[in-house]
Length: 230
Image (cartoon, rainbow, N blue to C red; front, side, top):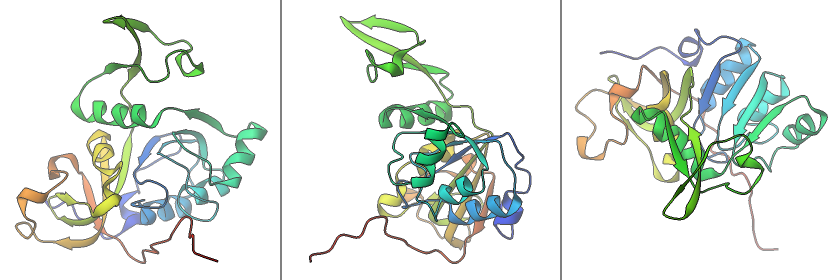
């Protein structure tokens, strides 16, 4: 039951080139910073990354893009990363842009063991090309498949050595559904506590979904866009 490892390097040691990874977070909020740094250091490539966005040029998944480690991005928003834009337009990077709700549901479905579902989002657009369409009560729906990710990496506020997780504020975002969706889930936490210290009524992800956990270090708490009065 003790799922604790020493650090991010140990947590990602079995991740190999060519794998599909889920990375939690929204913008720069709640991203698995330590895991990303360890992947950059590890130097693997040809990765498919499932994440709401691609970070910024010098932080988050942007660091992996700089090192040409990502072959394909599956995201819903990528507008803050110039290197991402350059690689996309030059044909270096394959990209699947999907509606944000569909992204979330494909994660949730994977965690729930649901292989596919129908959604109206994207019908009548390029997103629908090649997908099965059905009509329910006079409305057209697309069939979308649950994600199939080798690893999920999430960042939580608190966790215990059994893998139970609590997220703080908006850092909760995509992290819970991705934690439940990966074949192997790695959680980095700001505070690592003993079992029994977390109130069971406030646990967001039960430990059964988490395979590996470690206490992260040196979190930067960046602000993606700082807007102030002139």
